[in-house]
Amino acid sequence: MIVSKVRQFFRDLPLGSKLAGLSNLLVLAVVLALTLFSIRRERATFRQELEDQATLMLETLPLTIRDQLYQLEIDELVDVANVVGDNEMVTLLKIYDSEGALLVDAQRPEPVFGQVSEPLGESLIGLDAEEIVLNWEPDQLVAGRSIRLGNQVIGAVAIGLATEPLDAKVRGLTRQAALIGAGALIAGIGLMILLAREITTPLSELTEIAGEMAGGDREKRIQREANDEIGQLGSAFNTMADSIKQREDDLRRFAAGLELTVAERTGELQEKVEELEKTNKALDIARKQAEEATEIKSQFLATMSHELRTPLNAVLGFSQLLLAGTSGDLNEKQTDKVQRIFRNGQTLLEMINDLLDLAKIEAGRLELVEEPFTVQDWLTGISLQFDGLAKEKNLAIAYKLDDRLPGKIVGDAVRLKQIVVNLLSNAIKFTDEGSVTVDVARADSKQWTIAVSDTGIGIPAHAQEYIFDEFRQVDGTSKRRYGGTGLGLAIVKNLVLTMGGTVRVKSTVGEGSTFTVTLPLAEETDDKEG
Ligand code: ADP
Image 1 (cartoon, rainbow, N blue to C red):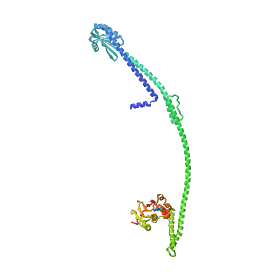
Image 2: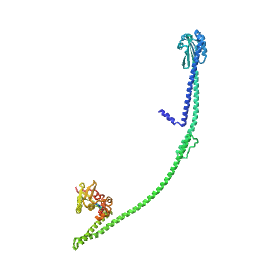
Image 3: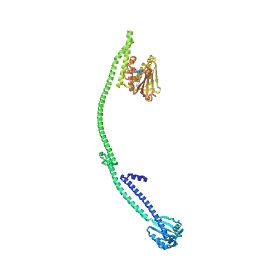
Image 4: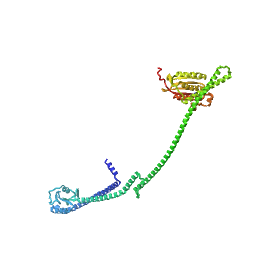
């Protein structure tokens, strides 16, 4: 936690302060290390000197006082002690008798004789002949030895030498080091301030110019002659600024070009739209004209069919009269010819009827009745019309009625019958052997179907698309062989569509066809039944 805070603080410091701080720390550490090192060395040298001096003194002193000590001439001893004690360095001088009791103490004005026994004295007299004891105390070095005459211990001597000069020296050194450190620190700080200015000024300049550039002034560049890292940074920055400006100019040019293109395209589009509008208007007119044309065609057909039927009925009527033989004077050949006139007239009449129907449906003049009829009766009516025809061609004919269908359905029974008649006529016409089936069923709750199937010649796939168009047959040979006009399926399709249903065919050439009409199912809701 604290460590990371300190680290963050150091990171946030300006670059100059960082550099100055680091190098000053370094200088201080060096000064400190040097000072410590020289203090240690001084202290070691001084200790050695002090010990050498103490040893030297303890070697000469016994020779000076040996006789007086042996004689116990205290006054003489005190004199010697006082002379030695005059030396500033000497902190103590003690002379002991052969028992280790203190005889002379340089610090005491009056020597005490044989009364004070000291542990130091007692330990000193037990020493070997040449042995010297050195003892470092806080502010003095105490050294001592025994004194002998021949082999006999006659006493001991101890001197103390002050360490104060050493302490003074250490203090001096420390002061010196502190002075050097402070000097170095000040010099370092000055140097660093200069250096930092040299580094941070261009950096601040860089920051400022970058800010201005970000603010939109793309012309600003860094002025810098030096080729050091900062100079290189500056020129890299300038290069970057150049390329940004270049790219912006490119973009601006591109945008201008784009605007132009958009304007052009918009213009073109507008032209296209206008053209389209014109075309639309033309189309509208064309459609209206087409509608009018269809209307006129239907009207024409209706009128023509009507006008045609009147004379044709006359022709048929007279042919019938002729054939009925009321005049009785027709020979075989003539009868045959009149029969042909009658058959052809009938075909013509059928065709005119079909045309009339189609014209009515197309002109939207066909009015469907919505009345309930009994499906079973309706189907029986159809079968009565076709059973003979099927028998003539030796075809089996079947009628299926789904018992899920209601007994009565609401619709136009006559037109529904026309649909089935057309489909069934085709089925019988295009089937030479096998069977024909009419299947009336319920598809679901809302629809019912009438499917007319045969085992006849079938219809090729490509023709299945157009046989519902007016006057279209599978091909020319069909017309020659089977006759017909190509109107039956067109009527079926138009009727079914008018009733809101659909018709589709499924067929395989040589196997047969199935035409399925799907119609909306309307049940009788009248409660007359019940
Ligand atoms: P057409 O008066 O020629 O029968 P339609 O519109 O009823 O006119 O039929 C168009 C053509 O469709 C027929 O000429 C025939 O080629 C083909 N077609 C219709 N029904 C069948 C069928 N059940 N089997 C084979 N071909 C059929």
